[in-house]
Image 1 (tube, rainbow, N blue to C red):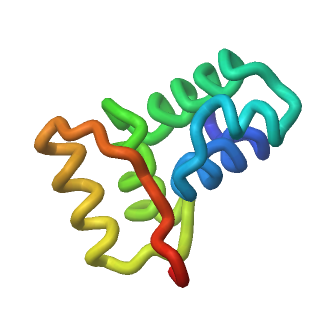
Image 2: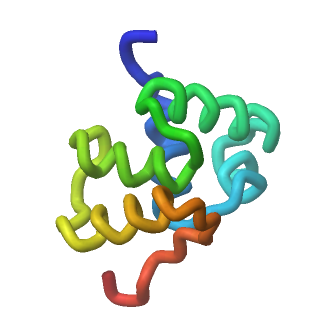
Length: 93
């Protein structure tokens, strides 16, 4: 796999914004399973163990832009410690 598809990038962005797989599927008119498969491909592409690790890697590598260094550091720390946390956008961010 050389690049992520447009849908995989969209799924990754929506995940980073705190949306659930079900919400993403409804927004994109695909099943939750398709979203889960897209996230699995994203994780493989980025060499990530978990979705939160994939989001951190995406920001770190520039696949996703817009996060500051502290946000990326905290995401990576949480992923490295094995935390499974919900990514919830902060109001006004």
